[in-house]
Length: 265
Ligand code: ACM
Image (cartoon, rainbow, N blue to C red; front, side, top):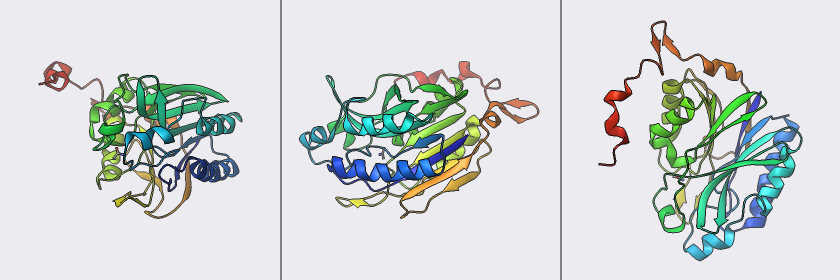
């Protein structure tokens, strides 16, 4: 299974230009016979909005919108793509990930943990993050700042995800290293597709990467590159949850002693 992450520099509110930039990555992924491609968060719209009107003007409905249509078309050839999309709905705007495979819209994940000013434009998602099946393998999806809440990666792993697909627009410097820990503590692959560039004085860190269940960085891009990086992974590696021959990552838990983490106060 060829898994790839795409790295790009979206332009704030320039929907047409962003579609053109995504198409360059889709073509590269096609040339490299990629099976599953992850693209950055909010790749249709850019990130640093100055008003709700600006966010709304860049948003689209999933799957009717123009970015979704491109992704659907690309996925038709037996492929899956997960991309961050500024989504417009009857209930407001969401920072979402559209999941498209085999020419169909599989589902949409709406980001649960909003970062900083995202709280001014977006509603937070109310649904558990999804695990989708594609070509016999299981993929979980979360978005950017969800990384700092280890509960999300754990829930995805408990739902059977073998790889966590992670569109991102990273600002803080910790995530790429933290995803190594998310991999080790859940024995899953992770694929973080980040953006680059500075938008309205906010700098994004690139360094998109794919990590293994043993915490290796299998593939990565640097802080400036635009393009994709591909790794041929054996997802069944993620099914082994033994951390030593007497320790199972899930069976050794004592959830009765962790009830505090599901209380609100
Ligand atoms: C982020 O969640 N985009 C930092």
